Length: 133
Image (cartoon, rainbow, N blue to C red; front, side):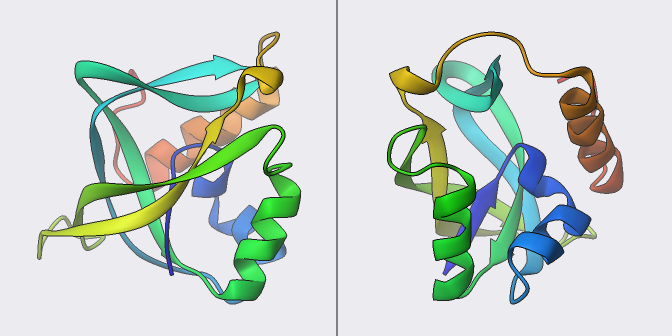
């Protein structure tokens, strides 16, 4: 299964711990969405915006582990979205459908910890995304 990550799960180190079968298969942008923060990262529909993402191939066991980590279905819900994906070199573009977590209303609250933002910034740098996003 393809998993679309936009937050802390862009970290290869953290994903290796949570999802031992997972492997990065590409990167891309969710068009028509914006990144927002409320305790943690989430995405919201917004015309004209886009969110950088990393695409993973995950096993069923990895998905169950992520469900637990993301407190599915109470903190995050799951949705299938299409994303224009390239390989890590930015070549071989294709449209793929993957699963993504989106925060529920119950999950909304304060701001993330400083270390959380740092983790996202490291993921953006690793995969060549503009940190200003």
